[in-house]
Image 1 (spheres, rainbow, N blue to C red):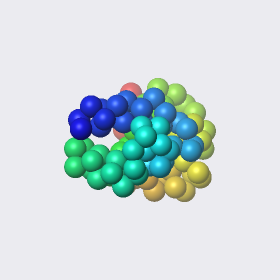
Image 2: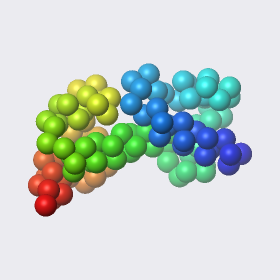
Image 3: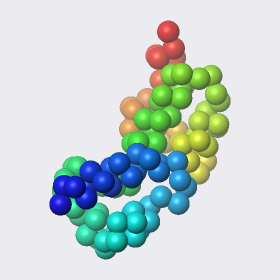
Image 4: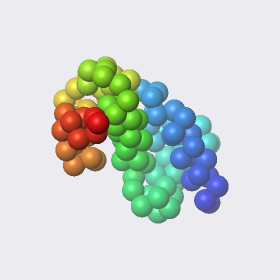
Length: 108
């Protein structure tokens, strides 16, 4: 039930930087079937697990953009996006603007 979901959320928050993190890895960790865990997660959280993982990674990227002057390649890498194009696409989808625009807005 809900305890499982909050455990999953905690697990994702602690392990988002693991490149191997996936629905099947999470399912295995909690000893449940991937389909079951996907459905339960979506029902409780209102979004798919992979979407959630992406959001956690993008939130981490946003913090890095706000607090460091690291290049986007470095940030994409640290938040385990396979390449800079994927990072830009996912960032723009979730945040509604490019990392560059975000940086300009957030830098005081």
